[in-house]
Length: 479
Image (tube, rainbow, N blue to C red):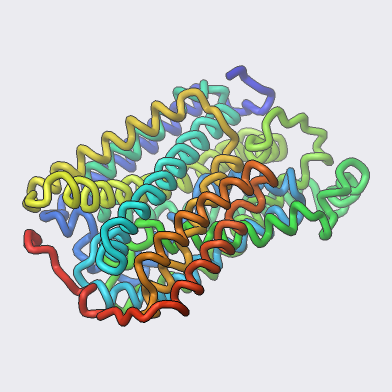
């Protein structure tokens, strides 16, 4: 990748910032990891996470580097509905609040979202769900790794591959050292950095450009970005809503926190985090609307956020964006590494390969799996074959198909394995067809609609009467 004019920071400053973050996060990972004595401590922080840390980890995990980089990209491509549509990702957090409480009640000994699907729907639906979950998890890991490389290159000129490698390495090391305790602890600090940084960036942007200049230049050069009736943008609005709901409802990132929070924390933590999350993508996307006024030549849409901030605010702005996006990136990447390793460990290694493994063996394997996930992500990220937005919305066809089977399984006794399996399979297939034939902005929408129809029909035709106490099963080898 060649250097572009957006490289405001000197490469040496970039390396110094990376070195500083490396030392801080790795030390914190080691510090918090000392308290993780057993498998449950390492994977679920002892199931004792309180309110403040619960809100912070939910917010920080959902404020990804994709939020701070894709929101500007979508505003640059789809206008006002792009950034407003991305903010609807908060709905998923808020809707998951009552589900988190329900999950904790029904599965007091649960470890992963796969545990629920296995106990509720049986082996074959469980295996299909694992395929969908792992496709999503790897895709999200790749998008986070790509975002880190793009950020560093855009701001410092450091080669994409080097920046991506450093960020992945940092997050893998401190997650291995501390498990979920380290992840949640660093999330708290990263949340503060993100919130302060985003507010400062918005204020400085308004002061430097102003609403009037932004509006007049948009009208003159890109009036379609102000069109509230742009068909693609309207479709994206609903598509992103369902994509975000699907991401959260199925992903072990959020289920693991439901298991890790204290019994009375999950509902309030997710609800408050969702409310606080709403303005973040709007503020992040807003700065992209200053592009025409600044006369920037944007070589790639997913670089527009860092380029605008660097142009407006110079070296200080570049450093500020670096800190915001690095914190957002790390807070999501560590959470995803931990949650995906849990899923691979419990549902693939223990569920299919070594059912008799004891907790000590499982804890060692958890660390090995985190390392392997990091290596796989790094190898796939090296060539940077896609933009962030297209990669994310490709996965929408997968995750949206799980929404209604999960809701049905949690609340309706008549939900059944056949219906859940067909809903996820048909939703994913039709969603992928829509992605390729129509566009990225309908993949999740179509997938969710098909899955909902199949789920509802199967429930209406079912005579099942599921016994909720079956979900309280505790695997025999668990100590």
